[in-house]
Image 1 (tube, rainbow, N blue to C red):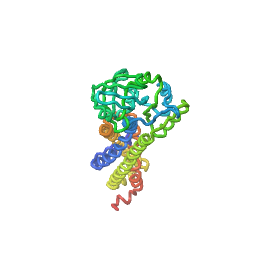
Image 2 (image 1 turned 45 degrees about the vertical axis):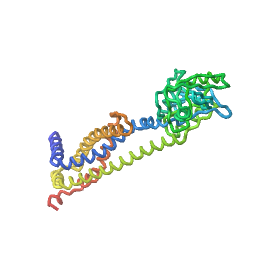
Image 3 (image 1 turned 90 degrees about the horizontal axis):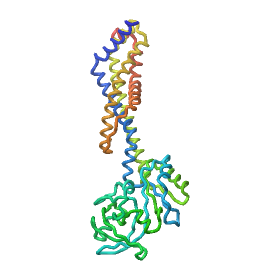
Image 4 (image 1 turned 60 degrees about the vertical axis):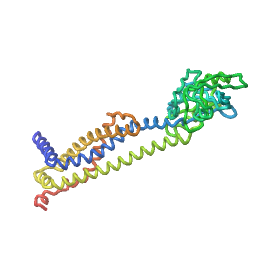
Length: 382
């Protein structure tokens, strides 16, 4: 028995080394397909969360406003909002309190829209805002940020001062410009001051006009989160910003399908290359196979020989593909997300499984041909 095993391994080693060029071609073809699959698996672990963070930079995808005819609502406590994140991960929330006020500078005076905000929070919700100067701090009560249209209209620059007043001068306060905001939207015509300052001025402590939220997830998850909010607080209306939320889901879905389809096509091409190479090897080894059968080799032993060759090919191709996939996924991550995609050892079993499946399917037809070889026919040279 030991002698037969020794002979088996000698034949196996010889079949791989004597035709090394064809084996290398088959190995490279398999590795290319497995590299594509490994890239897909590595990206699948990281790409969705990174893409969601990237898409979140385009602003809020859910707003919460008071039900008509109310103009303000009590701001929910942070822990209450966090408790709803089972249906949509809330990554940022920014409260806004709006009111018209008179703005005065040395050169002009006019009514403007004032927004009371927490600056750190609107920065998280709206990271795409272009800011000249610096962001004001939440605990900085005398600082303000103004829209670019306001800056042009009142001839204001960084460091300039202005006054805001309401109720026939009953509230009058001075602010210094720390940043000028450019968004290309309504914010360019607004003045942003500390939320607590405006709440005290209006006598509306704890009240806000709306909440702007960033929630990670496809549009359906954002809709579920909106329904949960409305069930929790009966006096509010939660509105998903359909355009942003749908765009996120569509982009993620399209990228996943593109990766899946391209990987499947590459694996099919790789399997065909491996199959044609193995078929050529079988044709070359017909006399060898015929001789083994003539000397008493059973079909099961010949099957074991070729399955062993396919297994070795799949194992080597799987590891080469994993290494290639890690390198490719890191390249894609740096180019698309400016972020490092970490190697995922947990993907190795899946990658080796794909390599075994691809190689097994590719080897099916060649092995059937090998088992069908008739010793008398091939040894006569027919």
